[in-house]
Length: 278
Image (spheres, rainbow, N blue to C red):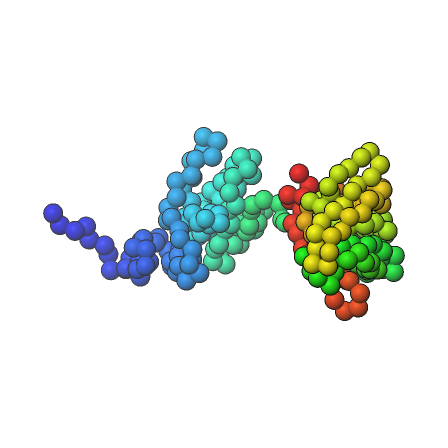
């Protein structure tokens, strides 16, 4: 069986990488650009949207591309765009030569269509003299710190997320949220919950065998703060994040907390709030 003949003039529109034969030089340019950027594409994609069928020039993992070479293409693009908007379908953009673009302008169309633009991302950070707390703790796994001792720690908080009208969150609002979280830690005795040997409605009995001897103390419940791990500055950073998360606006997606333990040393923890808000 003879191989179908392809006119010589059409060979210039062959995308040699995919083997697809394009109708126009513009289509070939788009195909070569997609290949150069490493994007797989389907040429001549048949699209069914709400019972309407369209043949779209390129389908990619990121969306659809229609090449505008004349009024017919521009009108098809307009119908496809409207149908996809109604159906909540994938994004579609149009690419065309100056003549095609002019026809699009006549029809009042735009060159890109898709979901609403994503809000601009932004971040803020805050340090304040009021972001401090005093506490006592004990670390049985560290010889030097296995006796009861205390610190005054200061905190810096950074918030990141989706800005609204150029604003992530008002500083005054954020400071109030941070102060309330820190107040829950002030003048508390931090200890790993595993060292609670006994408890009553009013007291915890803390007991462990450490490198510097046995430790046994009874403390009022309202002065103790139990942690799921050791009372390290690292765990305090994550604990502050868990206290901050419920009070932060929904557009704040992540929070970072620096806790300074003394001078020029401390811990930094950063977390997405997706799980913390569940």
